[in-house]
Amino acid sequence: MSDSLRDQLLKSGLVQKLKSEAKPVARPAPGSNRAFTKHPSGPPSRPQQGARQQQAPRPQQAARPAGVDEADLARAYALRARQEREERERQQREAERAAREKKERKQKLATLLDGKALNSPDADLPRHFPHGNKIRRIYCTAEQLARLNRGELAVVQLSGRYLLVEQVVAERAKSIQEDALVLLCDPNAPPEDDVPADLVW
Image (tube, rainbow, N blue to C red):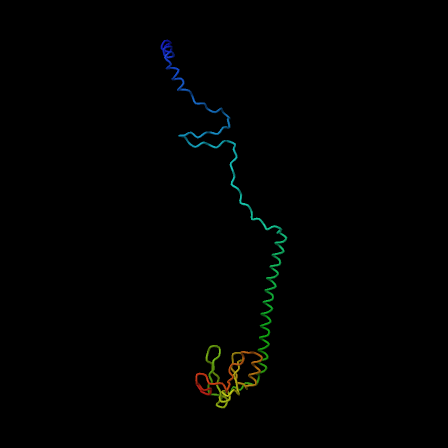
């Protein structure tokens, strides 16, 4: 561009206007810690260098009750363990005592009934009776059946066997073990369902 043309442009103010429009954008000096600002049409601004990121709060531990420490908890656990052990020992002693008493009753019952059973190998008349939710039977002679229905004889159980014994023996067996007595008729009791006691069935 010639000097004359430049002069003309300066005079007209056109060159001054073009210079003001082409003014460069100021850049931050190197090493500056200023954060980048978000340009309306550009990518999001980056965080400021050297700034500490905020950490998520840590969950707080469950607070213990006031006045409770490790020693108190240890004593409580020890006390509970001792109580549970004593309860197990008590139940075991109770079971052993019940088993021992049952064995003793069985021995006494066997001693009482030794040699007193009246079961006859010649018996051929069945006498039915309910026991253990089932109908059981014992074989008698004609005389034994009549006495059994009159209540003079009775039926007791020992080790799964049904024994025919005298009424007084049956009463003593019942005093030793309640469920040992299986059948003892009362001759004065009204017949059940109008079925006579001496009916053979």
